[in-house]
Length: 438
Ligand code: ADP
Image (cartoon, rainbow, N blue to C red; front, side, top):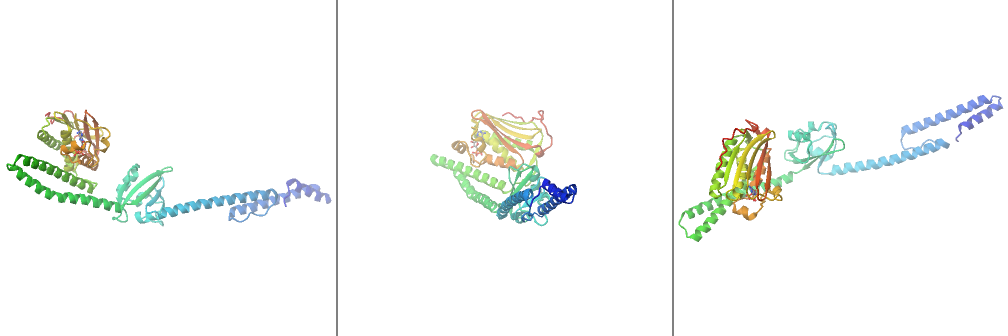
């Protein structure tokens, strides 16, 4: 039964009046009311503290209403909590069932949560690794560099830290306030398929070499004889096509070698002056063979060299130079230039030839992509030249830019970062002893 403050005081005063002490009676009534409130408070406090889902303590009036309301709110909260827990449980179950390793890393680079596949693929231990810095557990320097760099547009491919035969593709996504989601996918099967493809191309190219050499040898012997004209023409064509096929096989072999590893094997200082002079001489020779009558000019504006793999860089530079000789119509101007600036070293090949429509430019470095099939074939190209150039440059931390306008000409430039430069750096306009206008 609920008794209000006024009623208690009045009732106390009434009883007190019977004994001739109404004021004492009223005071006793108020005291009793106070004691009742304190008792109710204590019950409420104990019930709230237990929070064990039991019914609230019995009470009447305002206390009863208050307790009922609190009980209703508590029940609703509990239901919401259960629903959220169910969602979390389902999320954890589904991510645990995923084949990919999923790891949540907090903004201090510590491991916060991971699924079961992460135990298997990354060797994380649920018992001991929670809260530890990710870089203490995934220690491959390539991963640490990738993680620190903070630019996660491209995924990273590495062997698994627990099993060298497993190849993983790491992809990081930033979410929340600097938290990161790391997904590691097992790409061993894909890598094996890729390896099989590469091996096939390399083996097929290699196997084609011997029969081609024999065919070319015989054709050369026949062409040395005095042959009837139609036969000589046919033989001449066969020889040209055999040479083209040989170039194709050589380019395919080079590409498959480049594909086989992402790193340069025997990196050393390249004597650029010597190399570019050699390519320049070869360009002059090709110019004569093709009767192009171009004016070819080599300008060395810097004495700096680059570090890298000699054959690869020779192949990349000469591809650009020979393309300029082949695709520029007769009596064109071709400028070869090497210079350095604050951003690094640059080798460019400019011509004032046919140029290339802008739609083709982004696709030029794709294998076998050609702007004009008939023109490329007649020029003896393999369709692999620029793919090789791009591949070689990427392996050297460099990149290719193509600036071209139809009818005005093209400039193909190789840009090397400063780390790849050795020796004299900066632009030295005085050092141009090799400018040899043709
Ligand atoms: P290809 O063996 O056919 O020359 P590349 O990969 O070397 O193959 O070149 C791709 C295409 O780019 C060529 O087919 C040609 O159409 C175009 N190209 C390359 N260099 C030049 C250039 N200097 N001027 C005009 N077009 C060029």
